[in-house]
Image 1 (cartoon, rainbow, N blue to C red):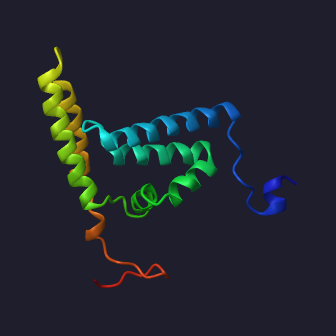
Image 2 (spheres, one colour):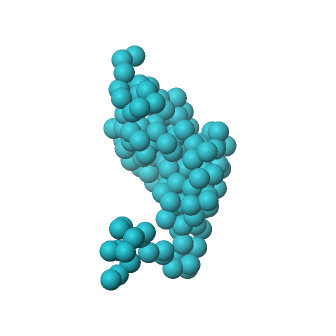
Length: 148
């Protein structure tokens, strides 16, 4: 008799330590870039925080729980996981900051002035396709949709 038949459904096997360390490191780098993106206009915060959450889910449940319970970043990640939606204010702020950053980069870079604008345009197109959190139906504590 194997573990699956003894205990019903066995837990998934743990990833090797080195693999979890890589995911944790990637999550920390993504979160750092997201925090830097708060202050630098070329780096959008939301995609990096979402990437950090995805990395933490594979590398560190403790860091993932911390991020999900964070006052600022937690709602963003929970909304993304639940509805694949981001707040409208975060979207417009990201659009504005990426546009400003692209103009500054085009003005100040000696070569490839168009590359930051291209990257920002691709991120903006992706974000524009996403629903806004405010457009989603409200849900009560039982998970049923209610009218607004």
